Amino acid sequence: MGDDSIVLNELVIAKENIKRKFEGLKRGDADIQSYVSQTFKPIIEPLNKLHNQSPKPQTSETSNDNDISNAVEDLATDNRTGAFRSLEEDEKDKIYGPRKKSDGVIKLGHEEVKFKNNEIIIKDSSYQLTPGLVELLFSRYPMQYTDNDLNTYKSILIQTSAHLTLDRKKIKQGGTKYKQTICKLFSSATGVKLQTHNLVYWNDPNELVDRLRLLLASQSVGNTGVLNEILSIFEELYEAVTGAMSKILIDRSPKLMQVDNGKEFYNLKFDMLMTKHNIKKYSTYSTMKACFVERFNRTLKTNMYREFTAQSSHKWISILPILIDNYNN
Image (cartoon, rainbow, N blue to C red; front, side, top):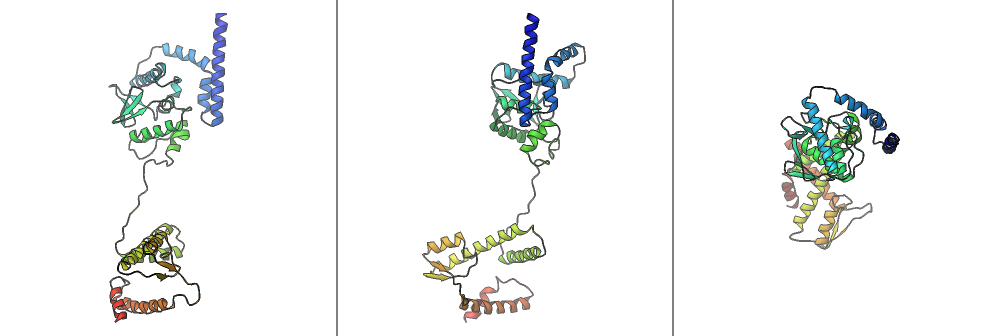
């Protein structure tokens, strides 16, 4: 009867393992190697015990694994992190997981870590250990964890660079954990390499307009990668129009203002300016349009292009006050 009950218990354990792994396979969270290991655990365990009883040299790498394994078992047995299954040898994470050095220091990536008072401590940061976080840290096949555990694990990886190669330029690739966890946390295979942008701050409207003219020409020949910069320049010019108008309205403000349908006049900031000075803005849609303004624009443009030709330059900001003064006098 004693032998029968032992066999029955082993069958029940095997049944529960098969059920748990089958659920994991349906979710896509386990692979065949782990599935086979758990299914045939009653057969494999005695063989492993016989194998471990044979004398063999104790290497530093084996010692490191045993120390980490003991740390996991301690976390489980004293109920500091709740229920947690002990790991088989082939389930331990030897790529992204912690490792214990010969001097007793536990390293995770490039940083020293300590396990104390139900927390993992990294420099001045500490993270509450949960069953899910422990499984993410130590297991090759983490299955049961929450979104909070995953976010905490990502923060730990970023702080320790445990997911990166020694030069910290690429993500270490390999195994089920990379495919199911690491690559989802860090979508780019090159990891922390950020795209380089050259930020240019324009303080001269002439340069801004020249840049816009160049981008529009580039777009006209099929370059579709300049649209965002074109839109950003338009936004800056819209703000410049609003800023110039606000200076004009300091000394005087009309009750009515006729403008064309350009976006430099029909945007939120310009509308707020009109509301502030109690000005009613309107546009005409007839063929006449703003005929007086358009005639002035033609005269100003003619005089401006004469200066462009004479100076061999299209910089108009510096000559605009002179042209306006000549027109008014």
